[in-house]
Length: 162
Image (cartoon, rainbow, N blue to C red; front, side):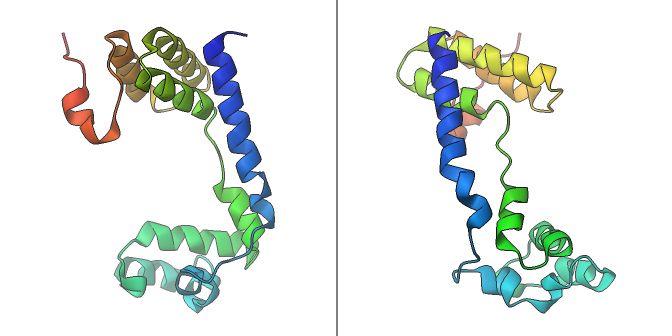
């Protein structure tokens, strides 16, 4: 196994091991009472009244209707089973290990292996018919010209289009 693939595999395994117990987690007292456990509208699941509420409320000092709809869907499917909701919401993308590996390699100046990881991720995403192919291509282009990709600099960090 090549070094980039080994790094990607180890990072993917570490991610899965860290998040494996998510199915046994309980709700927490930080914001779950506002969002789920103390919110009868959300607990009712997806209803017309709940959908209208999601788009008009400022509950929890936020306007985020998709978050409310997501919580309503979780309650519709799993009631107040935090573990089942957690399992549903934890879905690491198949190329996640490659993403972490190529970023780490590029940040340490190992661009040749970052290119290999980026190409493997692009191949995997293409095979899986994922919708982030253009983003993966842009990152591959950056690594090919020996530049790391950085979230906060992406507007100025993109390679010039020919």
